[in-house]
Length: 299
Ligand code: NAD
Figure 1 (spheres, helix red, strand yellow):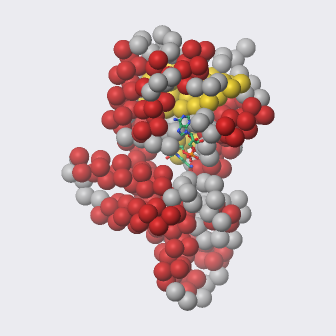
Figure 2: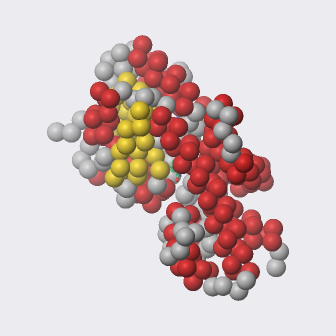
Figure 3: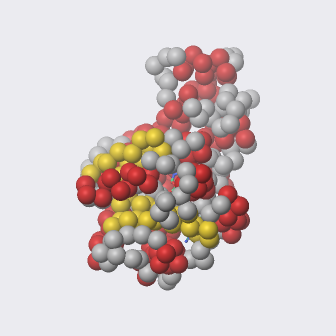
């Protein structure tokens, strides 16, 4: 019989990840502050808890998928947080994208309680989460990686051990800086080509068989109608929120400052996404940059 897994954070990503654990036959105990999200998982066959402490008291395997550093701090160290009831030997896998220093802090607290916290952020987007095709970037001790892999492989196809705790976040932050830049570049390119009279689907086809090809052009094209089943063809709803991309670019820019790394496009991408969030696009998918460029460009 498969062991019970606790899962906290059932949003755009976590809800699919938890469902995949259920569908692979794991008993799953879930929590989210959003009761509608909890109800959805209950209907899918999960058991429900009323706070993170209740999950910690009942299982020694926990996955978290929360928006940002402050939510992770709250869920782990807050009142009725995981650490208030964590059982010795528990493995905690945090798949949220957060500041690597916060991951390291959490790992230290866990160690003091005889438990293990690993960072395990993901890449792939909502469709990859749905289809269990995510890439996990894991930071933590060698000795705990096999156990982490056994859990994570049910939700993804690649589980990579990056090094000590925090290195998963470092890899993820680098990836998302490139993603933010490539999404803006793809949007500028699609907008320009359409203005030059090219059909959007044909332009995307050319890019995707040429040297400009990237994930933003061939999997998640920001121009509505080029692909079905991506946020751009669904009014930019669902997907990866602009506010979350802004957070990740902020983390990348802080890391660049700390390490004296030149990131002129990374900084520009951060400015662009910050402005979009301020203008009220925070809840829309980050590919909405295409629509904004289109509006900025005029007829
Ligand atoms: P989301 O905002 O859709 O979901 C977050 C969930 O956490 C929500 O259901 C929210 O109610 C819950 N939550 C917040 N505070 C909580 C608390 N204190 N206790 C319990 N639950 C709480 O975010 P998402 O898109 O699922 O992303 C989650 C993380 O994964 C983020 O760090 C994001 O950067 C990262 N990520 C997202 C994508 C994507 O495509 N959406 C891809 C890769 C990585």
